[in-house]
Length: 279
Image (tube, rainbow, N blue to C red; front, top):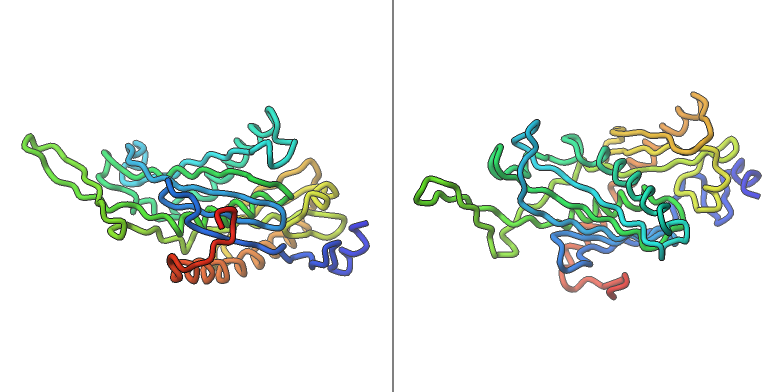
């Protein structure tokens, strides 16, 4: 039932092949985090919280901080997440997110360094899948970018004690904080091959008809930072080229309206309307 319409760039819900469903974004939704965001994409809902903690830098990069990802696939989102199914998907998602976001091209990891070789900021990014109706990667990546935009890291003041050691003091002033530069943080675009066409933001029904998918992370300049094929089917070189070009085009177009929305919401401060489950 999907295939005839796809040839004419028309899907069952009225969208074109490269159109997203309606998306809602809300930041600063979890009080005990340093940054948070909730994204609803169609009937897929994702909640992301970022917690900044002081840790020890990794020996290979002593002058950089780093990110850690954990994805919780709630069984309430879909029955498929019950038991081991949710665990395996959570690990798979976490590994992909680590490759996409935890690198110098996405975030200035040196800005997370407090004292080279001794102390750095570690950003723990927790992802909770609240509802699942396809296209998890895209929804999660938008939620992570929004949560990182919302993240406020306390300013650190280093002083020396009487014995010559270093003492770290965190500012108590909520406005005396460091913000992350998220300009180069990519968004993920998932393209599913259905018949002879590819679709963006596939629903679960469309996903079931797909032979394989291409997951592409794209920056605001249209640069691809990571690409991965998922699914049991194969993709011919021509399809990969077409899907890659479409991913670059769709991903690049996603960043500007997202950043505009985040900046508008922040400028409203406490006046902004709560649209999510905390409204």
